[in-house]
Image (cartoon, rainbow, N blue to C red; front, side):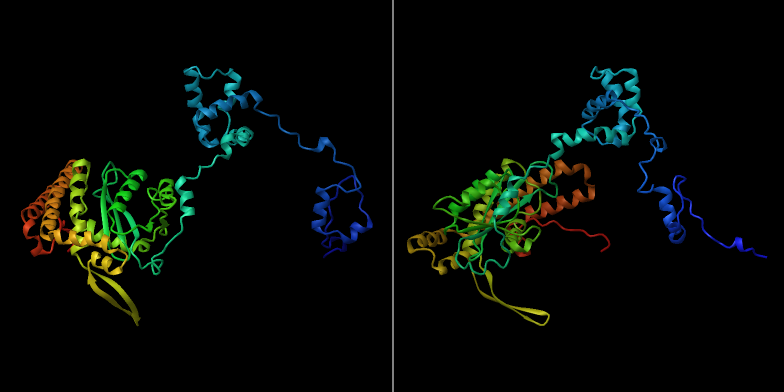
Length: 428
């Protein structure tokens, strides 16, 4: 049996100081009652201060906070979590060497600090520290890159005349970038395919600029523009100032980052004239640089005067295939003479140089230098990688080197212009 007074109802719990009025009885909900129980009425004054929870007494005084600063500086400004773990060892070490002298009470407080307390006490100091607003200063080549325009692989369509070069660096590191080794500065002309290459002992912007000036003096045509990648040895103030000289302006452009196809011409020459001829072995020292320079001196004449190449005329897409048409093969010198940019007085010395140059003698010089570089590269590789090579690898490399050195005069029969290392793949 259910009594009438037992019907379910909700009686709000209100503050003792406030009486329940008729409005409260008609419009009070459970949520309203909770609000009224927590917040005082607007008509009432502030809550009794005794009812407030007393603020806990500060555990760490100003002496402990001041002692924390030199410890933080001695730790090279570690974060709170790392500094809290280091404090016992750091305090003992600084006291041992006479850098710190704390009272026992302060020392106990410092060692008892948690990581959150350390961060809280150091927050004002970190905020006002001069190093708080430190940012890495912008690199010089970053500003140069922002000023140098970008040229993609489609940006050469309006440059039909000789004098527009793509340049790049090739590393002769042998797969190891540690230590000093030689570099090759490669430059190729877009219109004619004329190529120049020079060895570089040090990868430095000033050295690269000096080599580029030498290449400019060797060119049979005026230098109009240079396109390089985003390497700091190219994107620097020295290169920019040299290109912007009054009366000798040279257009300086750069490729997009991580887009090697933007420099397709020089990348192709890197493979044909550097990797195919010199190889991938490691080259170090002045002796290797002299041999490499002699090789490039013969290679530039042999390639530019006696090596015809195809040049793309047009390309059309036919479904999934691309049909390409090429101009008749010509040497770079033939394309240069046909372009009409050289006067008769300027062109005649180059014709005379072609008549006097012996392609067989040039090729013999190239082969001789290849053999010397193979020996130098093998000796340098052997001294650096002897511990990591197996007997089988050493035997295979020695056999490959002996075959190359013994057949320099007959390499044309095997279509091998340089030392090619056999690649052995497991599972084949």
